[in-house]
Amino acid sequence: MSTNTGIYGALLLSGLLGSLGHCLGMCGPLVMMVGLQLKSSGLTAFPHYLLFHLARISIYTLLGAVVGGIGSLLGLGASLSQLAGGISLVLGTGIILLGMSYLGWLPLGRMEGGGAWLNRAMSQALKRGGRWGVILMGALNGLLPCGLVYSALLVTASSGGVLPGALGMFLFGAGTIPALLVIVIGAGALSVRTRQALARGAGFLIVLIGLQLSLRGAAALGIVPSLRLGGLVIW
Image 1 (cartoon, rainbow, N blue to C red):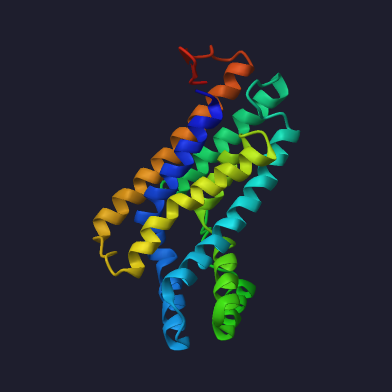
Image 2 (cartoon, one colour):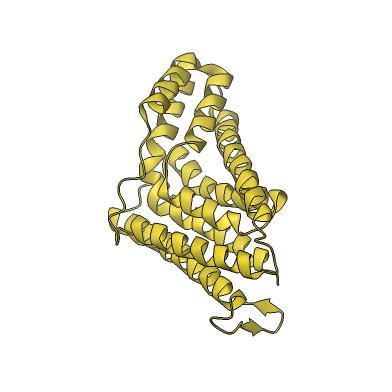
């Protein structure tokens, strides 16, 4: 099992848990606004919801390709040099801090909520309506500031390549789809306590990934011994 395989699974799971606990509150209203716009336009809802999510995930995938490419240039692949080990240690520490902020344990400032330009663009997309309005809303949703997305992008940087980075963020985005589709069929009434518990689960997972990357970097620097379980690289 490669390091990237573990990263892919963790990103998919963090997307799923985070969407159930966090995206229902943050992105759910956007999805419902799109639904109301589709209803008023007389458009078939489900295919357009899929277009919305495809546009959103395409943005995640593109961002993943960019950060994965940067990670590749920095040497963050399967085998770390000492320089890349130092970068991995710093990157992992950053992910831990971001995950702790997402959990509310660190006051790193508010990372979420759209800027003025993004809010204006979403308003224009809603007014435009139709198929292209839905696609534009999905793409803008993909750019919405979100601590969970920032954490996933930092994790993806450690994949060490454009295609692995794109795949990692695609899987993260795919993991967020079920909860947002649940809103469409009207079964998204999770209690606040349940949503908070699921959001914490995603945050804990992000922190654990950051810890693994930090230890991986520390092992490359000779600070701690490497750990393997058979063919599985722990760090």
